[in-house]
Length: 526
Image (cartoon, rainbow, N blue to C red; front, top):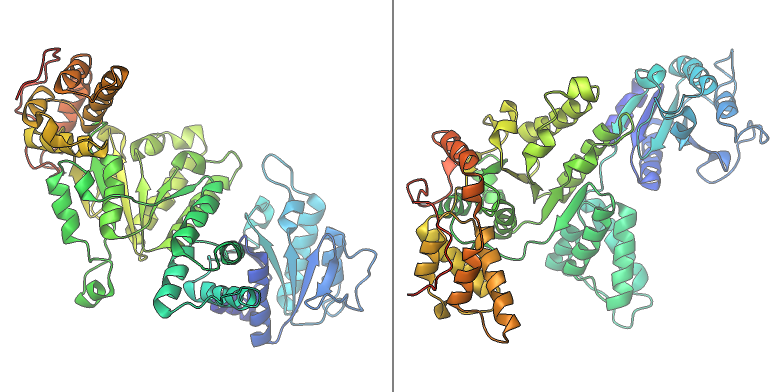
């Protein structure tokens, strides 16, 4: 970023807008840039007016008018002159200045500020002076959008977080009875846990944990980070808790994943392997697609972030586009990681009519996201799920967006037996106490979610009678359940037919030839 800003200054760009929530970090970067190109930086705010970086008011500034957003521009570059005001080779850093330019189209921009700024930009270009605005969101009136260059200031690198960690440790060690000392391996884990945070957020979390625990446990840092990231509503950090051993069936997709376990390592890059892009899991509801995403992240040994596309769409013009850029920026800062996009067809269902319903906002948002998926070089593995292929745009399905399209069908006989075993163990019971073979037979056509629901119902029956659930209880629960394969039989058949020849099968055995399940209320016997 420093090189880019330096290039703009040398090219005499009159104004920049730097988008970042880290105001002080941007100011420090701008100060370094000014030192390298021989510029003098000044800061304007509505509370303090114009000051230098030491907090002093320049002698040439009128202290009575310097807090006014219009007169501040005049103080920097007087009208009708390119020699008055601040000296040549000066930079005026405007804090929160975009708030005075309105929020189009809901709030009309100030015509006085818009006109004054346009006039000053013309003079600035010829007098080696530059305006730099800093804000969390870039909100500019249409008259200035092509006059001001916008830059996205990325989240801190691990090297920058390392400097923050070193500073915090040095400070807290002065008051802790046992000083904190991080070896190289421990330090790397702390920095990895803090990836995706701003320097202020990372600093606050480290200071809090250091005082509370006298240490910097990476797991605690990750937990604090998850809470911070969740506040934005755009991303949610999820810690995968189990691997493929907790997922019954799906041998085909498990095998595919196991081949790619080491694909994010430096050794894979040296071998010449490209960075994996992701996988799209297609199948009926309840077949475990979302649960498999967490298991996959666990097997890859990567943290997982879940994106909420519904929250990305904002009501203010430009907000949705800014949100998707913020998500991409944060995910890349978290890398290497897994990004989960659940039921992506619901998010993309309105893109076809976007031009008529929302002025094309949705199309632009998902166009940005899809372009990033195809061109990203950061180690972010996207795991998307979908229930209805008909709602997905064809550009999402082409090769290059995902490494593979996997179809997770209703589980076959052996897979249902495996699912019964996994679910019974998950609830603290021994599978040996149940007739798994017969349970698998009578739940033909059931999804994993329906099998789990049947066992939970059996547990309720047993609990009400103060005993353990039995095969008979499970049979009673099964008999009162109508599986999805009956209520959505036509849709599942259509989905299965579409997947033939278009998607790789995740299941080890096809279920299409099995007879449909019959609801029963009889006892299950081995």
